[in-house]
Amino acid sequence: MSSQAHRADAADMHSLVALLPVPWGEDGLELLREVHQETWVEDLDVAWEVPGERGTITLRSGHSVTLMVDEPIPELVDLAPTSKHPFAAAEIHQIENQQAIWRLVLEGVDRDPRRLAASFARLLTTAVEAGAPAVFLPACVQLHPPALLRHLSMDFNQPDAVINLFVSAWNDDEWMITRGLTLFGLPELETRHNNGLNAAYFRLMDIASTMFLQQSPFPDGAQLQVGPQLFEARTGPSGPSDPQVPFCGHHGTLTIGTVSFDT
Image (cartoon, rainbow, N blue to C red; front, top):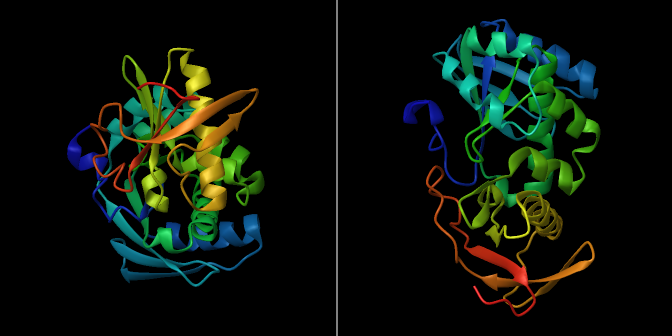
């Protein structure tokens, strides 16, 4: 996928950005309004500023989401194997044959992260219920299928649902590192995966959910209980920088290791 398709720089580092491969045209905006009312029993104000090119979606909170219509990016399908949940064959076909990309941008998320992230997540769920076969989040380089959105939408007021939607992790030979916490004004997390990739991933997601809930990072030297194990947070970074989303880590990095660990 080209760097232009990635579009992680489509807004500043505190903006939630989602790219939707869609099967509809200009009428899709009214469709979103109707499906949002049916799904969430709440109003969604929609308007085209330039029909078929640029529009505004106003959430119940009063915050505005900017809609920009881009050219199709069928290469998004190449990210399907890296998804947290498998895609259906029909969804893969729809991604490959999309009519356009609808790019949604919600700015200033760090001012009220929990409420705005939940509102944006509901809008993304509306989009898949209306027929979008996937949601691509450039800030965490993840392509999500409708089934994952529907599963997480059972309670977007819970931190772990929001974190599993908007935060991902990548790894090299030694380290696993989060992507996405920067959007919420928080440091990214990293840990060695010498005890296995799954253990490292769930450790980071657990700590990320706690930071998102309390809306503040852990101080240097803080001891953290994750399951039966005790870990320590150290102001980092110790591992490599993110090659795909350079702004991740703008608010710093916390390295997570066993108590009194030596990086």
